[in-house]
Image 1 (cartoon, rainbow, N blue to C red):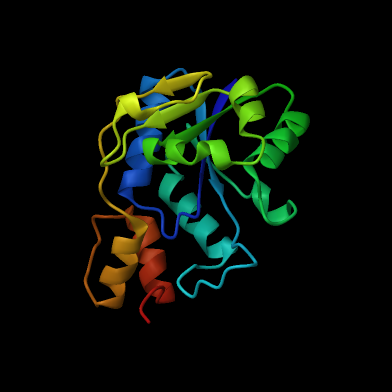
Image 2: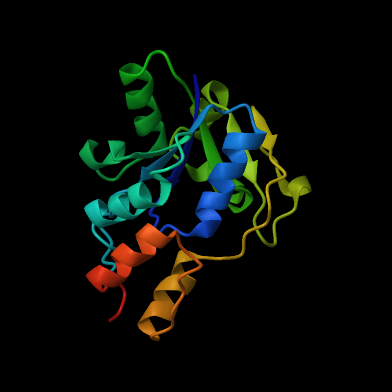
Length: 191
């Protein structure tokens, strides 16, 4: 089975994340998409970053009725800081029957050569790259199994949602209903 790993803080998850994951599940050769919720970096203070558990819960509530999408807390128990190569190595050892690929926005390719052991990632894993505003395909200089996916361009961001909630705006259509309800019940991002 071919698994696409979609890493992120998902702080909070929103319809843009879900539309990309849905597109990848339906229009690529990936069998499942795993949302890998990245833990808080212990060296950075971010008041707006929800706890790992709450962000995982928002993801779970968002995808509960779509079996091709899964939430993963795999990085919660790995050494910090989390490096993608270490997570991939752990997953390959734990799930021998799966083939893991990365899903990322095209903007991440600009700094990909700075990732720990990026060459090993490119040699051993496919990258499924979706478009991001302001990035052109011809700017890709990396060599490897890179698949440019013609997914819809998403210009929504988690920072926009956090700011809107702090500014007392109602955004029920920017997140799945169950996740938005949980966010409101818990009063996340209001201060």
